[in-house]
Amino acid sequence: MNATTDFLPATGLLAELELLRIEHAAAVTHLRLNRPAKRNAINEDLMRQLHTAVLNLPASTTALVISGEGDHFCSGLDLSDLCERSVAEGVLHSRGWHVVMDAIQFCRAPVVVALHGAVVGGGLELAAAAHIRVADETAYFGLPEGQRGIFVGGGGSVRIARLIGPDRLTEMMLTGRVYSGTEGERLGLVHYAVPQGQAVAKAFELAERIAKNSRTINTMVMQAIANIGTMPPEAGLYAESLAAALSQTGPDAAEGLSAFLEKRSPEFK
Ligand code: 1HE
Image 1 (cartoon, rainbow, N blue to C red):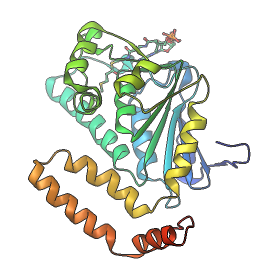
Image 2: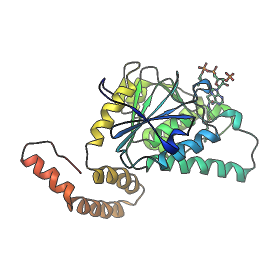
Image 3: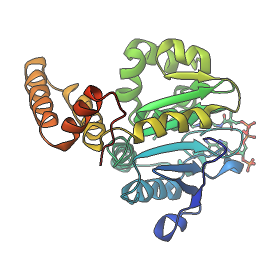
Image 4: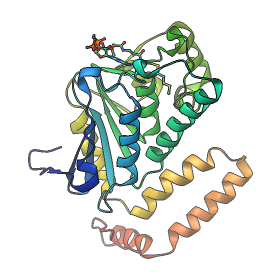
């Protein structure tokens, strides 16, 4: 986020989501969780609003930055919502989170999260659904579920396990271990650790760089890599060959290659 960036408040449906604060800065949309008095704990309303927001990003959005208002990114599931549920209701609740986390992971543009303060429980699961994670030095990561008598339900056993391995995830959940922002970078929980207060600026720098890529390539990176990762290697290699072949046809590849040969920056339409 540089000093010259002009932010325009979201309009229409996105402006009505009072638990989020959404602004557009050219091609980058900035979505802030906006429930600071409750440490951005995710209740049913916030979950629904997140879903609505990522499904209704304007066509002009080519990268999305998510951050949290107040002193913390997100304190996870709103524990006051956690009433006694039947097993069936519990499964449906968790599957509802999965739908929203999937909608974030596969929304219309790459997602960069800017993390500070508590990034715990469902907050860490939300961060894990993004494509790039930037943490400032106040950030800390934990999965207090184990200590609250509940299992992760927002995709953590898949996505967080992919980041740090099932072994470290097991240890975090069993012992309630908390990692700092810099430890998170060392372990692969986040891609960047930055000084206090600089996570949003760094996230914007990355988002603006991403927004200059070919939209086709960004979409393929988001869709193909995640899906190839779930395939047996021989199917993955075949899927990769299709993605490679598709990417080589069409105007973006032509522009990217000519720009290189003409020693200029590419301009993708
Ligand atoms: C909340 C929540 C919440 C804060 N649900 N209300 N998540 C957790 O187990 C983390 C619970 N929260 C905390 O440990 C702390 O709040 C923090 C370390 C994040 C921040 O501490 P602090 O001192 O800045 O704030 P606070 O005084 O603890 O909280 C301020 C208010 O926010 C207070 O409400 P108030 O009405 O008394 O002012 C808190 O009750 C409220 N608050 N966090 C509800 N999480 C799909 S499965 C996912 C499963 C999970 O995510 S489990 C992990 C849940």
